[in-house]
Length: 391
Image (tube, rainbow, N blue to C red; front, side, top):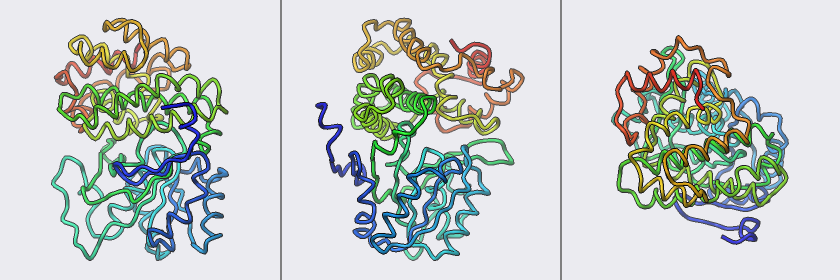
């Protein structure tokens, strides 16, 4: 990839229609027209609802005669009641599509609303670990456009949604094979206003996606190729995007890297995410930050037995040292440079929750694809280490 290509407009058809490039948000009206969308519900999180890109989006739709309404009652860690409220807003407004815009929470909320708004199934019937509900052709999922405004979650091309079950204090991965994203707009200019801390947290989220997906023990060369290219881009642009926040090339590199990392985790994830999901469900921590703290602990558990894959990841990240200790040392140095806290305890996670979190983590879908097998005791040790001192 050349320098100029990250500043150019590119259209890709894999795995969904993707419109990449600075300023591509201006084409949202034509994208909707081509999809025969006339009255979309715009779904975002509370923190993004008053940001300029929301009003810009609505203005761009209005200019081409497309009406819209905004639903922003989505928490940083979306919960079931918020999804039901979004379904009510969709039906009351007679909407014909959903545009999910913002970070991972807004896009997860948009996908979860899509899953349930046109049928009578309970939200939790779409649990990834359960048989998929039978959706009638007369009740199709709404058309769905995704617009990420952070470079980290990678949620814009796949249909899974992470939603917290408040009663159980657990996050669940919700999905249906028939829900497909109709279009994704990757506009790096929308990420320019992201504060350095969120740029770092979401960027390490993408890094974690690519690492965990690549080391899942399954033969999936499409996902592996996406993961390695994601690591190359993230290794080159993560720190630069934090330290040079107006650098549009770096923002573009991270947005593409994040998207590729999101594609790669169709293969699966691992213990970092299994733990992080449950910590976020109980303590409402920022997902990327939680991943960033837990990452070194799980790497020390996983990497010593993965020489070949570790070497490939080290090459993609431009590392000079390829031993397990060397790889982890360079990751930890990057986390230090990005001012990531050194333990979950620093962000308010108490030590006494370790048993409970580990029990829940073992039930998470990501735990089943971790490359090194573990049991409750081994995962509890990882959680305790992450709470006390992760690096």
